[in-house]
Image (tube, protein in one colour):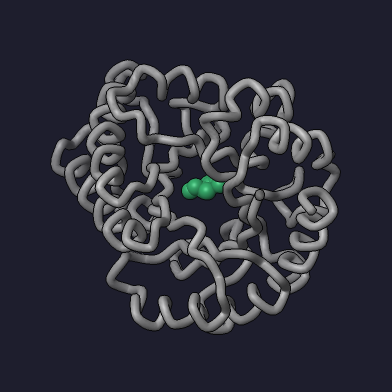
Length: 271
Ligand code: LER
Ligand code: MN
């Protein structure tokens, strides 16, 4: 069964980003439960910045699942990426992502590689950047395997990366990697910009999708834009997707309204 989740951002430097809840883990978890979400996706500043015992208690108290953990702070706060021309920075990027995997893995939760994939340009050719990306993904895919969790790789729209923008190109690329432990994070916002057809992209590569960012056409919560979610939920059901659809959306008009619209849309399309 497809599960619902909502994002909680704990990175002050990411203010203005597309996350539903912000800053306060206890009250955000309480809200997620109250509204009926199955789980939460967290975006921390670093693994050390999250009190593991407190988080574990919150998950048990509210019977919430830990859907996914973002690594974007590695880029936003520390300017690390897997395709940086400096080998020391690439190594630090891998270490940062490993530290997130070490936090999330024991919960059975996957880590997400989004903005930390970086981009090519300057003296770095696309081929070179993809080679460095492959080195990082192979190492991290194998690393995540010790926890029996996949690594989630998220294709982004053309304004955020020039490596892989569509689900189809990403799926073809991931098939060339040594690690078979990497799944695609399909973000409906990026897909709305890049795909010819969102539901066909899901149908074509459905068995490689491990997580979905659930949002509307304008990156507001599902229900506040003009995306047609029905063929999307049909396609996800058709391919047998049974993981999380997680609200990654702007807190517009505020976090609670965004969360409420998401869960109403989730029930309409997935229940
Ligand atoms: C960024 O646009 C995004 O979608 C995040 O999930 C990844 O950093
Ligand atoms: Mn996303």
